Length: 266
Image (cartoon, rainbow, N blue to C red; front, side, top):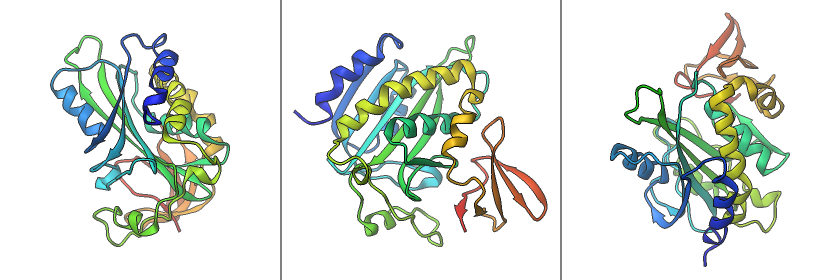
């Protein structure tokens, strides 16, 4: 039995009381767990499910970047569930807060969707939504894709996934094994999944406001010089009530949404 399969029952038992109808699936290999759940959503399947894969061959990150994984080297999974928050703003930040708190005290958050360990990329988050057909409840199916390095990837393998912007060098990678020796992907999934479901459900009712103080404690960019993808430079000054990044530059305080820029430390 694989390490992931060994933890399926425990994860299901921890989550199903709060999320009736919830299931956990593990596949040996797939192109992308998020792509698979989005395909199911388009086919009308909207039940809550956590889908993990031993190997992911065509994973997707933000801005078209890839996220591949090999068995035993990383944890890749996606969580899908119907959701109807009053405001979707800040969901990826809330997800990051949940994951970071479950993983290790040293894990920080680089706005808008990266997990950092010792100023290096440990993991990434991709949030997508699809319509459920129930306009009366305003529900949509949210698919939250997560990739976390267990072992530290080789620098050249990360560089190969840098995406279409060749001018931007890939960030040096980190692995969770650097601070949590001996944990397998299944154990990591068992650490993060129940809390992630609880926090996503809390976001539905309370919004990002409930997570803002927790994000501030893990904000890796706070007070640091940053450069936006359009060349603008400034100082990161936390996030606003909707989770948009605040940057103090020569022209004053700007608020930046995740769809507008890529932010990297100068």
